[in-house]
Each structure stands twice: as C-alpha cells, then as structure tokens.
Length: 201
Ligand code: MN3
Image (tube, rainbow, N blue to C red; front, top):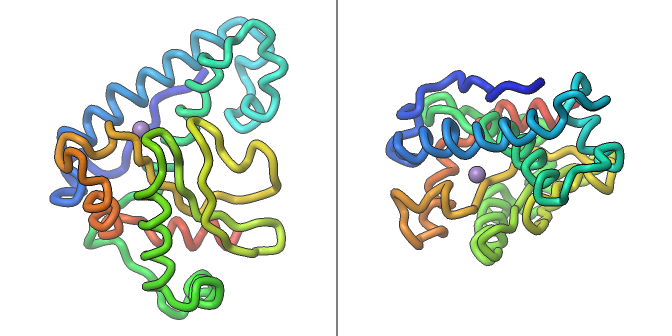
C-alpha cells in the first residue's frame, strides 16, 4: 500500500514563489486523493505489494480498473516527482561545472536558452498537459510534452529529469491565469541537485 510522501520542506518554505496555501492544498488534498484512489483500487489484488513503477508499467494486470482510475495512479507517481523537483530557494544550488550543465548548454546553446525554451513550451500547453526535461538511454536531452496523466516512461527507456505541474491547481490561488509568471518564478525553487542526480543515474 502507498502513503502520501512526506515533504522534507514546510508548505511555506517555497514562499514567495509558491505560496503556503497552494502547497498545502496541492499536497494534502490533491495528492492525498490520488493516493487513496490508488490504494483502493489495488487492495486485495496481485498489485498490492508492487512498486508504483511496476504497477504503472503493468496496468494490464488491473483488469477491473477503469482508465480514470489508472489516471489517478499516474497522478500519484507524477506528484512524487514534482515534490522532489522543488526545494527552498536558498538551497537551490547548481554546479556550473556539472555534467548536466555542460549537457544543457551543448543541447540548447546556453542555459538561459534552455530556460526560455522550457517556459515557452510549458506556457503554450493546454491546461492538463505536462512539460518535462528528459534524457534518453544515450544521455541525449530533450524537452517533451505529454497529455493528461501520460508520462514518457510509459513508452521509452527515458529518465525524467525535471517536470513542472502546470495544472491550474498548482498555481491559480497565487497567480490566477498568469501561468507564464508562475513558470518564471518556480525556477527559483527548483532543486537542481536532484536533477543533476537523476541525470547521473
Ligand atoms: Mn498537481
């Protein structure tokens, strides 16, 4: 059975970029709901004691599950990645000599160009789409977008390095309809060390 992951930072630790109420609602309400739906659906089945990655790659074993239920399982997983992406701004350090830095600069011409491309792609998505930085099995970086709950790990041997939740519940209380402003600000609380670690795996 799965539990709602505990955040290592407080709900207000990402202020002023992500506000306390948004964090509390997003984590303790939205993510908690996905966790409950996941557990209810796998209770008493052969999936009950599997990892979430196993379950997501074997949804064909969940004979009775509707797609809408399976979507909740993806949301459970996606939000775990999202919380790990974030950290208080004073801890958002990044080695400009790191391998990831070099790879980003090489792929996107510069780090600033990467940030702009990422924000542009994420801003232009429909409300429920997701924007991610991924690497494939040959360590090639790319920015990809997917619809709804879908995640690139469904189809390919890829690692998600960074993903930003751009559903309205992630920013609307503070930013209202200004998604681009949310995306510009969230970069202050991205845990770059975690992304570097994922890149090195
Ligand atoms: Mn969300």
